[in-house]
Length: 127
Image (cartoon, rainbow, N blue to C red; front, side, top):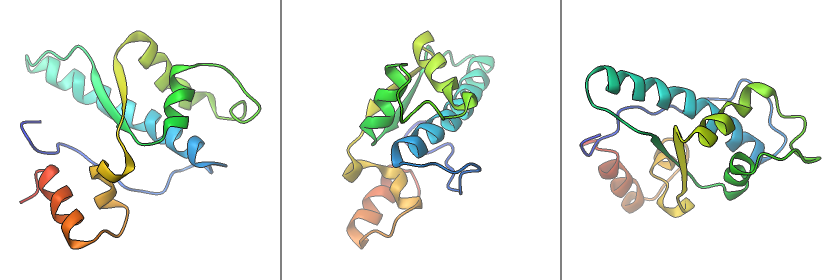
């Protein structure tokens, strides 16, 4: 907000994922819960937000969110994680693709070179 990050988190997921798509799907559900809380707070402060934009670099997870079909690979995902699907259908969150090389959050989870680290630090609003 206003050119700076207002929240970020990096931690181990509480449940085991069997694929990167499932892990990203679970992370998107967690992110959606946090983002909707922030949206409500902003609305309460008079800063109306129609929806929250969430950036993801995993097209498989984005497809699973926007195409709510059950497949052999997704049928075992806990129902609690399907929260993100419901909120996307309602238009409360909008998912956009962000190429991995542009994913600013990687600064918190991956070793980066000096140039990329500085670029992402600035994009995150950290001085």
